[in-house]
Length: 184
Image 1: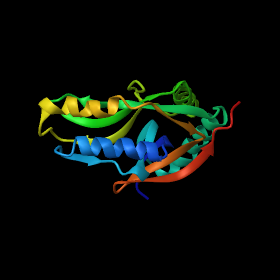
Image 2: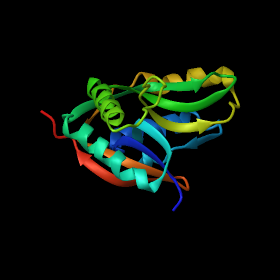
Image 3: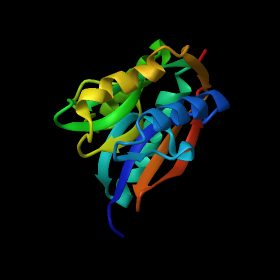
């Protein structure tokens, strides 16, 4: 059996409020070539594992179960939009995320992974909700002004209650296992 591309994350519900924000951004940026994330695929990555051999998945699941057991449910606040890359070389359009609970879940996950013999990602944790991917901008001079459309919207809050092990395959994010956040 071949290696599977895996990551741990939390689901983000495509609430009416979030769908309205997405629709507003899509209208404002309609002249740009953006590969928009479908609402049912929205998630926040807690830890990316890359390709994992099937024989190692049970130990990974054990570490994630341990991390979830020690983490309490928490609120997640979605903020305004931003861009990874710059106007000359944009890559990802995202919504900002503020959540001490998400940072704590990430830290607990990294600690449980290290205890199980895994090496967590070396990159600093930068939580964000990916809305779309870009190759280049058609109108970079107007992009920032159009992005401001969604910056003034009030923050959206959702409750996170579980940690999920996802497989990324053929453009799909498939949940393989779920653990409730059970900590106090």
